[in-house]
Figure 1 (cartoon, helix red, strand yellow):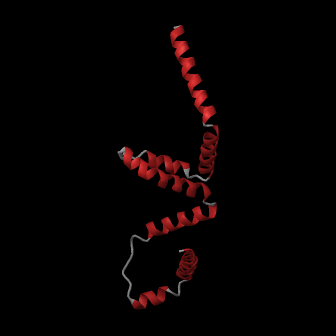
Figure 2 (cartoon, rainbow, N blue to C red; figure 1 turned 90 degrees about the horizontal axis):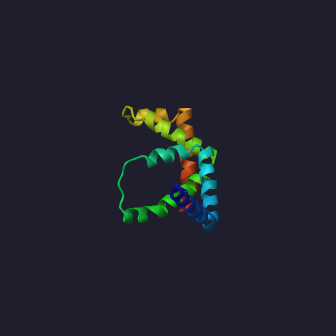
Figure 3 (cartoon, one colour; figure 1 turned 90 degrees about the vertical axis):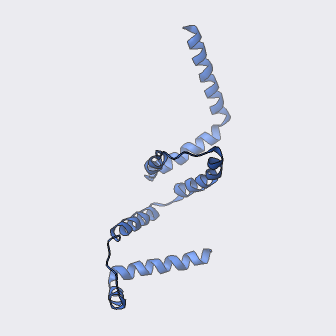
Length: 133
């Protein structure tokens, strides 16, 4: 019994030693997790992590920097951008059922205020993106 307690105490000591050694990194990771949770993104990341896709060590090494970039993006994304992306995904899903349009129907659709807003948004996005590439 005392051997089990001794082993447990030794394991705890090793854990605390690692925590002290990596304090800054642990605090930084926790802060990022809190931000992701507050933005409602963490649940989606957890869902993605539940996918049963086997990766080799080399593949994980290749993916890790990209995942870090993705997490930095997710941590820094603002609420307004999240809302726009959600609306875009909803609109995309809703638009999967459509009828082909000819030139006359396209011209008529251009008079629709919702289409005009979307075109304005798309063109503004294209201009601002073009400035950055």
